[in-house]
Image 1 (spheres, helix red, strand yellow):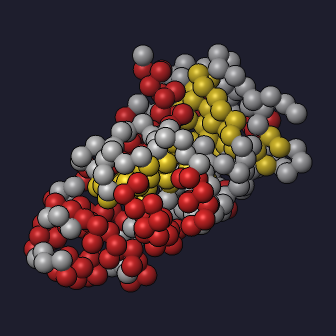
Image 2 (image 1 turned 90 degrees about the vertical axis):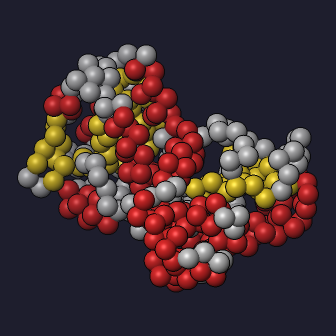
Length: 155
Length: 172
């Protein structure tokens, strides 16, 4: 199994679809911190859901000037329905074709399941990974680690 | 680990110096919080004065349109000394949760409709609610309900027996 990328490493560049006709490249966000949240699949159970939690914590992330990106192997239509259903205010990237290619680059792909791990990266304004965390797949990692990492960046 | 210590500004049932503390981060529109609410009552009854229960707000407003206004209404009731009555009334009537229900409930507690109207318009308790929420996030709250027993996060089920057993195993 590949290993999750560690702090100090340059975050691999990618360009992925956010909607059917829009793409986003990591390098477009250079100059601000980026939170990259890999999760296994859209439509996981409700009240303790990670994607929904981050939506609520978004104002706190923005205090650090950080952009949050959700990323899974689901396609753009699935993401669109999911984002609308959960009223999400941040983009979901489709790591769909070739499937899981970005997850593999970041060392967070689960070959057997064909999904990404549940993993978090905080990337600094220069594109260097400053914090990464591999969560047990069934566990919502919360937002405290992200906020502490963003705080450290500011110091 | 609970990052925000319990203070007199919290909603506390019981004595601050009791050997056991149970802190809940809850959302008035969350069905799991509603389910656990009567169980907490039984747990409190079981431990009596040994246990202090604290309720903090963790409204997931993007998913639950009434979570925040329900929290405002409960805080308003709290500012008149009726927090726990309102807290219980909201959970007991969660299935019918609506703006009108909140008006009816505050009236039941002797407050006026105008009190609630002003509170909701001015978002009087927004800062307190947000502080509860942010403190919860810092403590690793990732959904509702999340419990802390003597400042340590409780990861077990919300069944009565398991909560009792977790509290019994807490080292004071």
